[in-house]
Amino acid sequence: MSKKGTLIILLIIASISVGFYQFGKPSNEDDRFVSYIVNPKKQNLEFFWKNEKDEHFKNAENLISWLKNKNKKLLFSTNGGMYKKDNSPQGLYVEKTITKSEIDTSNGNGNFYLKPNGIFYLTTDKNLIICKTEDFVNNGMIKYATQSGPMLVIDGEIHAAFKKNSTNLNIRNGVGILPNNQIIFAISKKEINFYDFAEYFKKLGCKNALYLDGFVSRTYLPEKNWEQIDGNFGVIIGVTE
Image 1 (cartoon, rainbow, N blue to C red):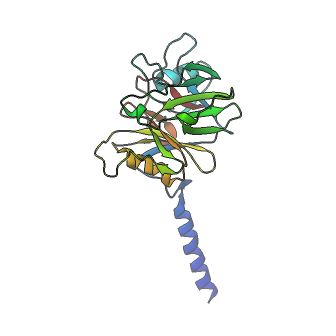
Image 2 (image 1 turned 60 degrees about the vertical axis):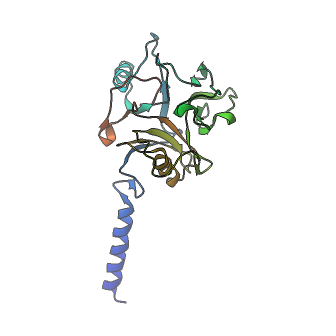
């Protein structure tokens, strides 16, 4: 083969390679979702519920203002699980190793009680874990934790209760553990059923993923021009600098 022919082939291969990572985005990025990957070893992930005056943050707008007064900046936030009418967490909530709401292992109606539900937590040595509620053990090294439900992906399999082509559509947000032990948060741009939402995490290689909430969900991610700062919910999960 001539040198010219070899050069053409190399240019074609290079063009294909660039297509897999356009502007630093993986080829499997799904336009149905706004997603954000967090490396807990390098980024500052925190859970927020109330300020020092015992006032609920409720939304990203209030959290941004509070952080600004502390010379900190909010890079990302999303609502971190379900909550009661008084904005208190439904189920387990741990903040800075202090349990502020006890684990809920009871049965009931609604998404939270669609078993198995689960717990998303950060350890004091900066490991992020999602597990079924029944498997959770507080060994004193839990820095942050929030309980929600249902689990979306369990040991690599989609929750057995989810049905393909279900007409139960809603805005949904959730979190999954990637194969490299980083985490991905995602919110759907439009209404979606549980099966398709769970399948998104499974295709990314998440062995475990947890549903956080539905139509009330909000995500603040200015780097992707997604700035939902309103809302009136309980726990907020954020990345700050």
